[in-house]
Amino acid sequence: MPEFSFFQGQVVPTSEAKISIRTHAFNYGTAVFEGIRGNWNEDTNQVFLFRLREHYERLVRSAQVLNIKIAYTVDEMCDITTKLVAKCGFKEDIYIRPIAYKSSDIVGLRVHDLDDDFLIYVTPFGNYLESDKGIRCCIASWSRIDDNMIPSGAKINGVYVNSSLAKTEAVWRGFDEAILLTSTGHVSEGSGENIFLVKNGALVTPDLSSNILEGITRSTIIELAEAELGLTTTERRINRSELFLAEEVFMTGTAAHVTPIIGIDGRSVGDGTIGPITKRVQDLYFDIVKGKEDKYIHWCTPALDPAITNSL
Ligand SMILES: Cc1ncc(COP(=O)(O)O)c(C=O)c1O
Image (cartoon, rainbow, N blue to C red; front, top):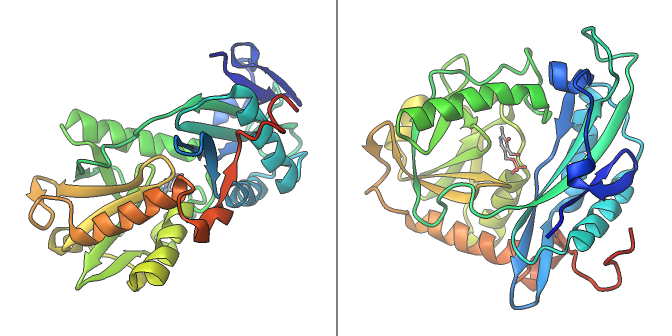
């Protein structure tokens, strides 16, 4: 099935969407991006885009940090995305990657006096981590980039060198994923996920001063845990040792969904199996992202409406 992208204001086959080797964003990481999932529901023959609007609202906020002007409103980007997904027509889980970037072909360090552009590509995307079995993590030797080095609350492409180094270190050491600490040694997040601990039957997650990305899945889980499972979440600084003392630990993210962590640095988390609270959170989340819960259907944008197919 051909893949299509939105590139330089038009829909083109992804194989034709090319940037120059001199593009500022390619040379210096001066871009911001989003990762949005489309979740396939075979009962309704539908792909549901999860919290589409919230992702574009965050993209706009991230872009402001890098002085990137996006030529489209949030509504327009949602509309373009839905139509692009409809045109691609994938009947499986997909990943949507919008990028707003410094597009000038120019040598020189800055974020002012440069052109900006915006693109979106769509690709089939199954499990990112083993969310059904649980994963084993290590604590990375790389610290999470401090907010006053590159703002961690913005989803800036250049920051992902930090994440990539940590992920590769984890894999080379035989683990599935890395947990990064702040430079003061507190728990920050995974390479591309937020982290939650279960302590005394309640949830705890690093606060915004722990150099995290404020994840949309993180906010979703905090809201659902309270509303549907009666679980409170405390956002605070978390010591490294708390990772080893927690009853359960899990990661959240658009790519990772809700992924249980069953081991950290060679130690079992709890009894080394998926914990009961993690399982309840995970089951609830999977039903909601696939558009199976009427109460939360407003978070799910259907993309395979015959009326929008081929209308872009
Ligand atoms: C560094 C980092 N932290 C956390 C997350 C989770 O954010 P979200 O739930 O919005 O996907 C991501 C993924 O986007 C990420 O890249």
